[in-house]
Length: 384
Image (cartoon, rainbow, N blue to C red; front, side):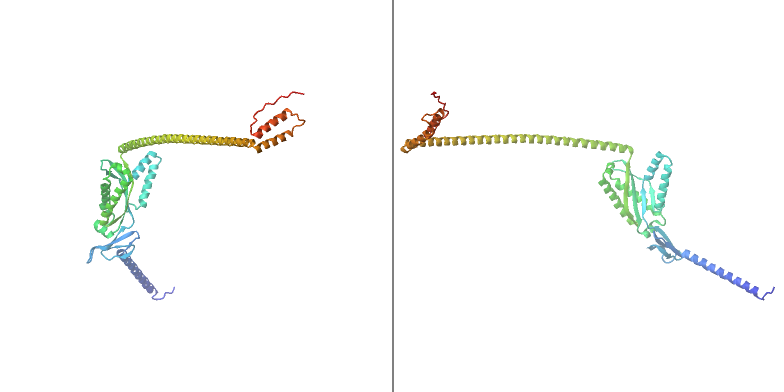
């Protein structure tokens, strides 16, 4: 085997050079990584960033809140973060009530309820932005206790002020938020008496007063109150029973009073109906009387008119007969009578009158001189 002189030496030098280059590259990477880790920081989209400087001309908290992004932080400085999202503080008996009902149901329901609330707390912030405490026990103005299920929704508006007053992390919740929330709610809702919680207008007014008080106190410390929600309330069992009985008695009294008023109104209505019916009967009687009177007057007038007419007709007929009789007694009248008598004799055959012809002759003669024949008895004639 033939070996070239200096090849082994060149290979050794090459390996030594590569080793030094690799070490240098690793050193550079380590230094860059160390520099990046120690001198940069990232603020996420749901966070506020607050810078703290420990060395230099200006030490302490910088008067600037940083939004989401990557920032360079020099030596002796640190970037602290605060949640930018909604904070929820619940004073609730929801979980205790649900677990109590689950125990009475059995069948593993209690475990499922616990899992539900654990999952709920995790989704709502895992304790950082969501805190659940015991429901508030409000001592009312009349000496009774009302347990309220109430929720406060707020955000950090000035993270720099919060950092200066309460430091880092979630110390502000225990140091300020929880106590201020509890004291404000108890001081305002405690002005109400126990029964006023049933009055929606009074309840909303007291809750609005609590919210106004919280808005002022929270703003002074760098927070902003978004909403205050009274979700539910409950009384002690003894008071609730007494209040229920009182309400039933009041409603029963109101019912009886309204029924009495209704009966009075029905009586008034019947009285009005009776009076109306009487008025209608009187009016109908008066109308019938007037109708009968009008009819009687009409009949009287008609009979009087007919009597006058008959009288005038009779007088006229009598006058006509008188005038006719007077006319017949005159010279011309006697001539007419003779002429008419001659005409009657023309109807007689054989110069002998039958009874019928004689009766007709007499009637015609009476009619001629204006005398009513009446009922003329037939004249009996002897047979030849």
